[in-house]
Image (cartoon, rainbow, N blue to C red; front, side, top):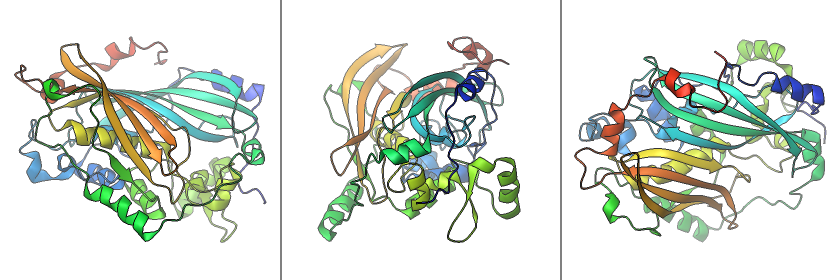
Length: 400
């Protein structure tokens, strides 16, 4: 098989160049949305398959605690996915996971700013073969009046494409084929999906060990990816002359499609079989933050309109290939009171048809309490966390 992707190497000089950039603000080529306007939120929600009316039903919005539509917490991925493909040209990047902390609800119409920087570089040996480097990033999302909406810490694994491919880790891979009976069972999961919505889920009524209502996603197909990209274009994908100009400026980010000569960004590993093979993967696969958004979808379905998602951890440990189906499940593992909020800790998982947990995660949710005069959502909407004050609390500050 001929190479269509650039085959770069991890070198001491390349790693040093990365470390020299720790703490320096970065320009994110992955920023897609810059505001939570109605259309952006609607397109994002449709792209992750989330029909919660809180996100884009204007009539429903008038009945909610804040009297307006909100964006899903994971919408901020569309402002910045939390990593920047930088340094080590020709070395592939696999998004490894993300840790979120939210401070305020994301109301429609907010102009959102992003501050992102590299905060650590760790060398290691990859299970996919050869050397690898883990880049850790910090991202702060804030409004034009410097109110912090959320903080995200993400990491990406940089792996030499040739080493990953030659390892042949999943050489026995076979695409999933489904029977009509199996597909009916999957689609029953869609029919049975429930959104808590306007009915408060009170902290007093929740029990440790209680399960969340599961949701299903798949079988993954090209249309799912197109819908997702309409709401969150995870990498710059210009067309025609603009693509050509970007190719000239970033030649290792692009390749020529061997079937038609067209210019394609390396992100097409998610749809192009030969590109996926060149990256060391047996088939096209989803985007890590896409599956993370589904974890968040599970939680927001369960918690209801009056609750507030405080934190969420997700790891992208294995691939979700075209044809795969994932069930997202969770349970309550702890109830506690902290910072004046009645909170629950959730254990979460995305599990494929083979019973493999590809996406382990967790979450902290502030639930309404019968003894409170206002909901966690209302209280958080009044909270003020200023950007400059917040930056002083981080262990690896940005150089501003």
